[in-house]
Image (cartoon, rainbow, N blue to C red; front, side, top):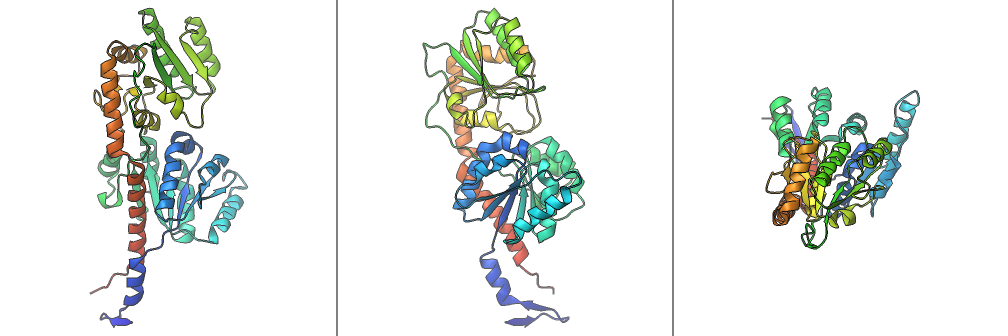
Length: 381
């Protein structure tokens, strides 16, 4: 069926209606090492949610661990690093593997994947979505401002404000999609009144993670007569120096090291307080997970997250110094009822604002909206 629109324009109305009713979405999610390490648990729920939303999904990345995200029909395309002399040939292999079912949309989780995602989108004339989880992502976005075909999914309103106010990206191209995690049915913080308070941290043993400052904070707490047991779950290049710091401060009876866990939820939920000692400008999934598990959270300042609300969902330190961390932790050690109130507040906040199904529904709706825009042909007057 055709309709004349003047000036020789012809619109295929029946085709437009059919395609608009049921826009097809086949998505590629680009995930690199740091994104997997920071958000692995969130990404697992993300993949399950899109399966529930009947959106075919493939995951592309150079880290073989992305295969753990392949649940049900979700597929992984693992490639070797695309830099160096062999980079072009390896990139072509990725495109060949995707070409059997060309994607209609390519979604990069963080800035590590922006260039790869843009190349895939260009190859298949697919929609392009950039996830934004940090100020580093915002900095990388500036390289792509000349493109008018990128949509942005920041994880917090604070990051959306940076995109809109500082980078002048039209608000129509920005949609905040808070990441989703499951929530516990109970509050875990200070659930054992006769037990010494237990703290846990999952920060990596690397420079800038703040783990050394946490150890010094514990030293101050012990010197002031506080009884507590601290578990540091992680690994990294600074592990040896951190263990030495614990020994020289005579803290071996108060601080225990343990290797990182694929799912640290059981360890976090067995603690009273979760500590995030690093001051940064990136989304902190570990504090969100701790809140969802009903644990009181002590964290260094972070100006790009929405879930750190001082006195409501967490104890937010004025800075990341050992003294500030020690003061915040000691407040909860001396007032366990306040710690439980914080845990309740964090749990309720996650339940209201970070539901797994809500995340999947919002992402799926945004994907289909982009597909619908592609499927609809404007009628010129």
